[in-house]
Amino acid sequence: MIKKHEIYKTDKWNMMTVEVQGRYIVLREISDQWGEETHTFLSRPALMQWVNNRFNKESYKDNEEEYNRIMAAFKQV
Image (cartoon, rainbow, N blue to C red; front, side, top):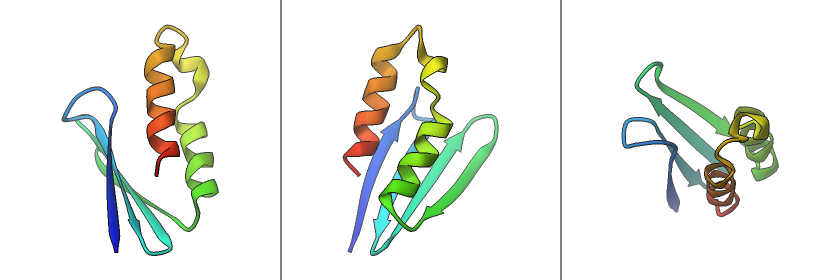
């Protein structure tokens, strides 16, 4: 059974989708600058470690609400 979660960063062109495929978690990051990157994780803690490294809280000092929204969306996966 595949569960798909869509996590939007800024708009429809810069977004992330997360699919839970059995024991694998597949994250697709789509960017207008870099194209599409795919990451595969074996556990939710590994995903959250990547998320914490990718979305540094210090980068969102001016927009803490967006940071909290992104983190909440990933915690629902």
